[in-house]
Image (cartoon, rainbow, N blue to C red; front, side, top):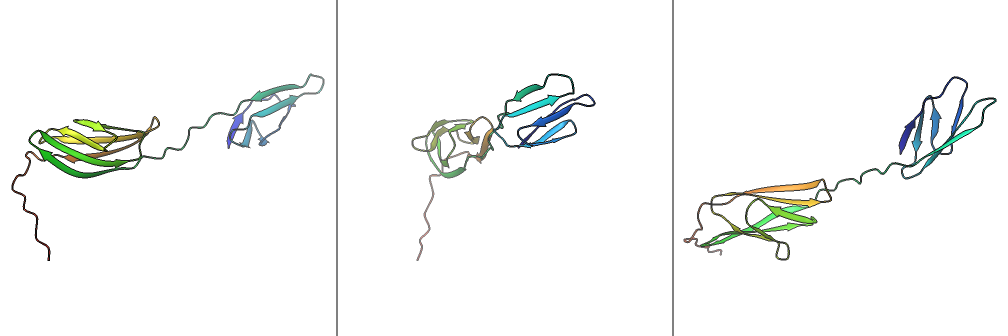
Length: 143
């Protein structure tokens, strides 16, 4: 809902086809509905004005952004992500939306991945990238 304020001189009768008319205010007008306001005063012509309903901004639903696996080679790291955002950007590296990865991330940097939906719905994740690419990793034996 929305409200419209007005100023009326003493003795003027104000009515509206939507909402509730109170002292200098029409309240509870349904969202998306125009309101026609009529004012009358004995001995004068009736005046009518239509107020166009304001466009209320849509509720922001922040995009999902989850950081996944990190892999590396001699040139740097690749970081995978999952997102339902309209766009994904990264502070360093190259974003590939088709593979949901950020590649070419330099060793020892702080990577910030940002997912956006619309103009103001944003989710951000930061990842500290190791300074080296491990070469001596031994997978544990599970039994």
